[in-house]
Image 1: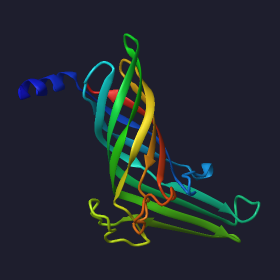
Image 2: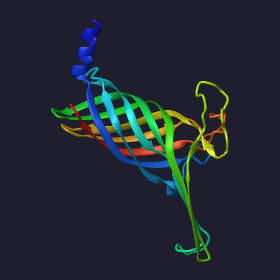
Image 3: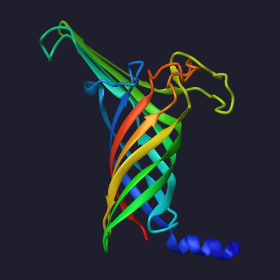
Length: 223
């Protein structure tokens, strides 16, 4: 029976590589709003599989390397070439999503779909950059983003510091797309539920400092 189930899964599963544009941001108000001018363009890439449960409902999971973060630009005068401060904050995560997919057949080789589900992500790399120019004098700094070595299964924040992010991020994805014969087009919103700074222990106090990421992606089936 187990061998039969494995063979059935292998025959019906669809694996595809995915890549695309992320428009990343971070909430800055108690009700979870973001600033439009803080959107940071970055990317996502990885491999996902749909398990082939049925023609209408399916499960999807895999591994994604995905960028998050935000940017900010402050101008102290009317000039855009002097007296400014520009900052970019761009951490990268390995994400494991688990989506429930609802498929809506449109034609023989054309389906629409909607998906939703949780994700877990672990921070692996990233850079922060600050550029400034004041009264004609320019300066620039680049720093690697640091992550705390926290145990995600305990309530306390291990290795917390104001200069470190939490290693683990949790949230949910929701989106929709089109599946053509040899290509998958996907729009996704990733809603982080974890405050990103390692010193923040209460994720439910308000909605400040949580990731919000809109992704526009293209998938190419491998089978």
